[in-house]
Length: 263
Length: 233
Image (cartoon, rainbow over all chains, first blue to last red; front, side, top):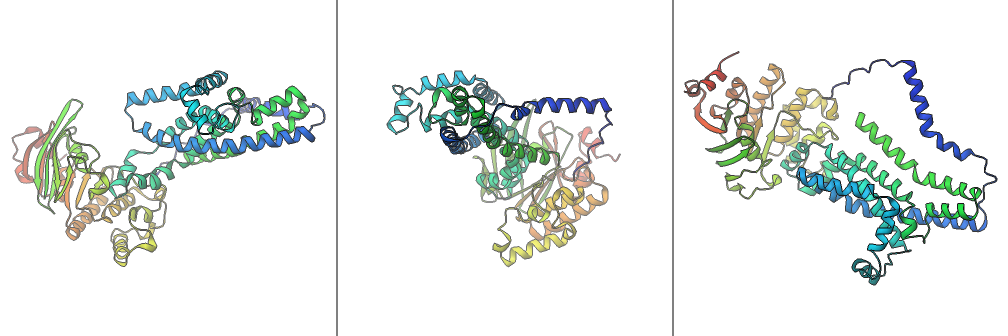
């Protein structure tokens, strides 16, 4: 049923050279890991604080991602079916949440969720302090990453021809079954790629989190504290852990998604 | 019995159709491009909702209100086979049926019969990405028949296929209609194809029904454009 793509025209050697230089430029910042900054420090207080920040970042970001998927997936399904005008409004709102400078978002969130406010007061009565708490940390991460996930999910869902889902319904499947047996299998890699973007955005967030949740310190805030208090030798081990936690999974998912799209 | 009375506003065209059809009968919708034939089929399938009117299939009211697609018992084949690309041929044909272990002997036998009679043995376990266009149409046909629909809607499902394949698919459809007794409404721009499937024809022009009768009666139509459409190339 598929048709083979026409062969690409041959490229000149200088084009390969230019592309290689471009790739080196892209990856060049990683060479900073090899910089001579003195003996890396991990012992005592530095190691304990680093381990605690890794634990905070991984656990709370995972929780934030659960919320992002639980809220973002139905939202993307709804927006996908919205009229063109409604969809434009939704996309503007999502883009706004992405484009808002992180520091500004942190200040706005802190003000909007102040304890004397309606929402902040309600959350406080439910035992969730909206500043310098795990709840504040998770909430901030949800805000900074939700837009990325929903926009990515929309791209994944838009790639599925509606006729396939209509056909599944005509074959006797209810809406939930159509989602589980047609929509999700066809969009899963795109959704995973969207989630990986959201993960990177959330786990790496510094500007907003440093305002709303200086404590408990996640990896980005702890890196900043180490930098201020102990200098680069204390930063490097945590920086390596940070890169290992943030990058491999999203990278793999993106490559898989691209491979599936080409297939 | 299928009772149809519908009105649907499209950009620059209002489609109006009213007709009845005995259970098990076959009716061709014929007319120039843009006459509203596919709109009528889409409303019957439930892909689009009419603006006014009613549609009843036996004792089941399809509209209004729009009956959800999964409760319609309607098979709908279009120009695209719309196979599920993540499934094999078997997965597509058995889609919506209980999983293999939970199938009754009767369901297993039914699937086996579809596989055999629609010549799907060779590709049964293959991914649908690896089958030919002709096989894909037969898979779509088998998938639809697996559910024994009460009403089958065909919207130019033979477009792009060679004559031998079209002839074979028409023979298959006629045979299965005989066996299952479904009501059939078909749209095709080739009168030759449509007349083989449906002895009765309903001609549409500019969103309205202008003639109903046999193909011989249509050839005597007062509409010059319809007579022109019936001329051989």
